[in-house]
Structures are given as C-alpha cells and as structure tokens.
Image (cartoon, rainbow, N blue to C red; front, side, top):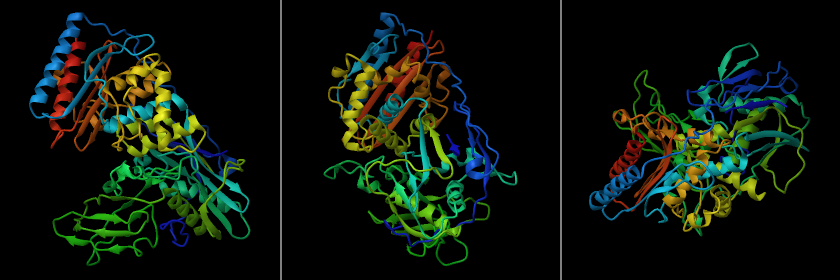
Length: 566
C-alpha cells in the first residue's frame, strides 16, 4: 500500500471545473524538521501503486527522554512567600486595572506518585471560568490519552462498485499550507519539488486514471467519522461560536474530511484592469471568481479588502480596497472559510480526475452505515498525532483542537465524533487520569468544544493544574504533551512573552487563551534541575485591553520562577 506520511462550490454541485496541470509520478518525499520537533519522517510511494522504486517510512524515537522525575520540594517558608506574593499581585490587580474582573489562580507542585500534586496556591481555584484557548490543552491531552502517542490520522481513496470514495479520518492537516515548506519530493526525473495541495490531489487522480475504468465513474466522499454538524452554534443556536466569526479562518467548519484548513486563499492582483483580479485562488478553482461578485476597488495606499461568503453557501463577494502592488512586493493571501469542506474536497478530486480524461457520472457523499473496506487506490496520507498536537497547542489552531476532540469522541463512543458528547467523554478521561480526587476537582467544569471558542465552556484553575500535572511524570505521553506547548520567549503564541526574563534559568511551557473579556494562561514552569510546577491563571469579565491580565499572568509566573531559583 502506498503511503504519504507527514507529519460546491454550492453543496452537491459537480458542474464547476477546476483545471490544473497534471502532476507527475513521484518517488520519495521527505520532511525537514524545525529544531524542537521530535519526529523525522520519510514519505514512501510504493511501487505497486505508483510504479516506482519504494522506500520505507521511519519514525525516529523521541529526542528528549521522559518527563523529569525530580520531586518538587520547597521549604514551608518558600511556599508561604510564593502564596503571599501571588495573593498581593491579585489583590493589587483587583484594585487596579482588573477591577470588577474575576481572577482565579492555581499553582501545583508536580510531585511524583499518583494523584494531583500539592496545590500550593489556590485563589478562587474552584470557580468555573471561561478558559478560551486553554481548552486546547484539555482536548489535545484527551486525544493523546485515548489515541496514544503512535496514532496517525489516515486519509485514503478506496475503489467501490462503480467508482471511488475519498475516506476521511478527521485529519485537520490534509493539504494545510503550513506544512508545505517542510515537504519535498522527487519526481520521475529526479527533480526536487515542493509538495502542495495540488500534488496530494494529483497522486490520487493519477492512480484513479491509471486504473483505466470503462464508462463514467462516481467520485464520492465519506466523512462519516464525524457528525454532519460542522459548525458549533451551541444549544438551540445559543452560546456556541460567535456567528460573526464564520468567515474567519480561526472559525472554519470542522469535518470528517478537512482540506487546505477548510479555507480558500486569494491573492488579489492590481495590474491589468480597473478592478482587482481575484483569479489567483488556492486550491485553484476555475470558474469560481467568474461566478462571484467583485465589489472591490484598487487604492493607491489603502488595504481593506475582505471576502464575504453567504452562510450555508459558497457564494462569494469580494469587497474593500486592494492596495496597488509595487514590483517585488509579495501578495499576502486573504483567506475565507468554505461551507461543507468534504464536498469541496471531493469536487477538487473529481475535477482533477476529469482533467486526466476520465468521465465522471456523479460527485457526492457516500451514504449508509459501515461497510467492508475496498481496495486502496493511490497513497494513504498519514499524519502522526504528535504533529497535530504540537501545531494545535504551539500555534493555537482551532481546527486542529476540534478535530482532535471529535476523533477522541469517536474513539471512545464508536459513533461519529459529535460536540454533544464532548463533556461526558472528557470527564471520563479526566477521571481516569486524575484518580480518586477527580470528582471534587471536576465539580463545576463543563466541556463544550475543544478550541475554547464556545462560551458554554466552564473550567476551574484547580482542574487545569491537576490535568496538567497528570502529564508531568507520564512516561508515555509527558514529553509529547509538554513539548507541544509554546515556549516562553522562544516560539508560538508565547514568542513575544517572557523574553530575556532578567536572566532567570527556569523555562515556561504554556498555553495562552483570549476571547473578548477573557485572558488565560496555563502551563508549566520548569527549573534547570527538572523541578516543575503547574499553574493556571484565568481572568474573566474585564473591559478593554487584555494587557493588564497579561501583566498579572507574567508577574505570577515570574514569582514561580523565583521560587525555582536556587
């Protein structure tokens, strides 16, 4: 079996042609890795499927060993000093810029042994709060717990009577441009090329075309691993995700088959006409721009362009001003989310198959329950969970968090992953991880989604530190989980925070989170001897800027680092 390891336009319409150059057969694809990533993966294409010399996939072991085993010990005086300092910081914030806001703090020593470590600071730590993106550490940890560190999402095409079906596994990374600069392959002439969404579609289209089917064929999609509800509108349309965010990439639909992070990327050009030219779209869709309305204009100095999509459709309107481009200046892509991503993906595949001379009879969604697997056609695209968890937490990717959550729910229930099962599933996993005290710690918590976009989520700081602590000395999952978090002053969403840090040797690995009136930070402080503390600082209900909440969080984390100092 070949494998790639990484790691409607209107609904139901099959009429739009998406014309692209034919991709050549490939030989070997490889990933080059950034410094902190642990996995080194080869991408083989097996001879039986693609007619080339095969190579084997390999997964190197984790570079950094299990979580530190040092017991976190401090003197009673040191503990009292920390508690007093944090209490003073919170009191001052409540009297100052965060007056009227809700603030909860939990700091827990990551001790060895079963059960949560000692909670050495607890300020309203049992108050249920909005966690924002701190929900991602819950969703990603639950996925690692249920699916295991060696799990890989697998996307494949199978042959069925009368045609082919593209089968999704919930992989949020399929065709995500963020990975393209790390993926290369050699074509049949030995030329090194960069992998992109067109190459992935091309591998499958080539394999289907080589089968030489007589007569028209069906190209279907099976996204039944997740529920058909792709957007979390809450209970009865209330308290879920903000409807005003539907067009933004951070609020893309979530499906059992995702592609190109469920968005279209446009690069508007300002040469050759009175209006901007929007025909440069990726994935490339011939006819899409002609079917859309262009209300945008060219400006000498203003850049206000945006794209409107009518809810429930893929009808687009291009709006705003596009700054006239100067020679040599790169065109920054504008993104818009798509409706029904699986149907978009199967349309893309079908039109590339058609472009190779194969007649298509029907494009649609495969209906019905489970059935026997058919022969695999072309490569199976496999993405290690380690890659997904790292991108979810380090870069705070909502689509990745929701896909991890729904895949976890499917694994635990045997049913399509659905948001309605999120709370029960996470509570079961948390009880297994935290142990006998889980009942009290889970009191008041409610888990509505994986990304934290939903305002129905309620999480306590005490739960978050107990959850984090459960990964501290987990020899199977600890390293993957902790290293998936952003490193203070170095990378991801914390790159601009905790820089230099006045020479302190302790490091911060944490997840930040923001919504309007919400700012949270939860993670670990680890000193250079391996001693570690879990912390959670949740701020809700403030008005205006989040900067005062960030200052409070950074001051509390600094106090922990001072405790860690020899």
